[in-house]
Image (cartoon, rainbow, N blue to C red):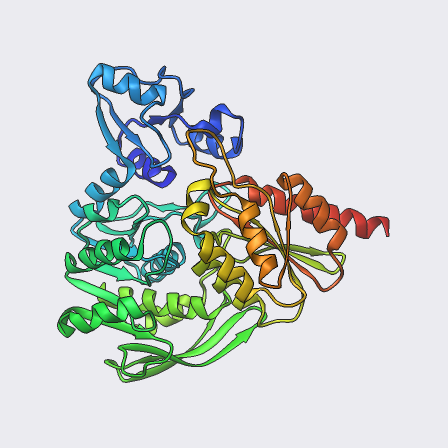
Length: 455
């Protein structure tokens, strides 16, 4: 919601809002930032809904019973979802790039934004996460970029709202189990790609590769880490402590260009190829795109190192579904050191939907010495089915021969992490939909530093 609010405010709209987190006293700095940009904030009690002339926009987390929504209905104000409003902006743009897929959307969006910015294209960008390249003291929450008529937007499929988007260029990174069944996801993503003029597809994912095989080659740009017939491919991939190095091969251009990408992981090589493909579809030369990515600084909470103290490194990571978790663990296992993983599920619904996937992922990706620690899922209010809990995941992982422990709350997880942590370990704070996870990671680091000083 924040990037949409900032973009509409920059366009001259009067913008106000409410948030459960504001009422609960959480993330006050973010709300101060919004106020500083002329956005009025109200309690979520209906008091901010003044009349029928308002357009009231709600995120997927806002239920119909919220007083603001009930008040808007009573007054006859227009109700829209966040996705419907974003789709209106995307569909009205003279040129638009929509980035979709189960994993890698925010990072790919940030990469595309940086390439287009460096190429002088002045994009307007709506991302689901903070893009470090655009963070300044005045803009600490840089999930939006105010630019011109070329719009770049991360597109979410979790609530089915992807059906509203008609971008000129559709980027589809991958399809894997997340919020919906695989059959539903294939239909949603397939229709999204079909509505575009140019599709950027990943040949390394079976479902997106199948889409590529069924589409006209004239409207496709394909990429792969293993298939040399793709329009963009990579070779010589070499993980480094400060990122990853590889050669980018442009089949159409007949070029092979070296790239040191400052963010780690094979998944980020794939994200980079997707971003380069989208940028070239926007008219950026291949060499310019590759050169720009050498300066890409990453996305907040994507394998973000909070710091190192007492020989222990603390990492803050957004991974919250089996695909993302596997990518994070694979990347970290490229380097030595035990992993102490604190995974906080991002809701009881996702936990119930992906229970088996979580168990398979952690059982298959954790190393012999690694330890998984889990509290119950994050919960900030609303109706919820608690038929599956973190205990089910921990039990399944332990049955499969890996170390996993259950705790009543996150504070108890933190205390146990401090008991376990030894020099050379990496603590990974993992989860989504909860800004305070970064604060938790910072607190762990502070505790480690105090231990080091005391020692």
